Length: 86
Image: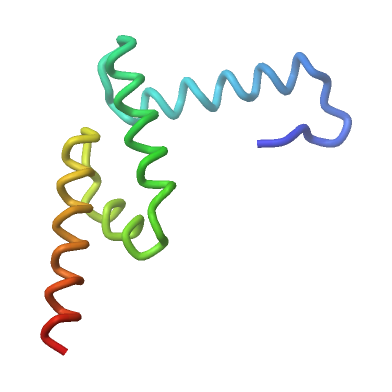
């Protein structure tokens, strides 16, 4: 998210805050430090994956980082098996 043309710092901070609140609400996480940490780490993990793996994970919509990690391991293992078969 970036400053809009003519937007004040206060307006931008307000827009950032509203976007964050909506992001947290839509994620349906627990409103705790642990819930927020889980959400941010999971989303950063998915964003750090290559595009095919990220799409695979997003399609399955894991709610926990542990689920995302296991799905990623399964996907990587399946790809390795396919490569061995060809």
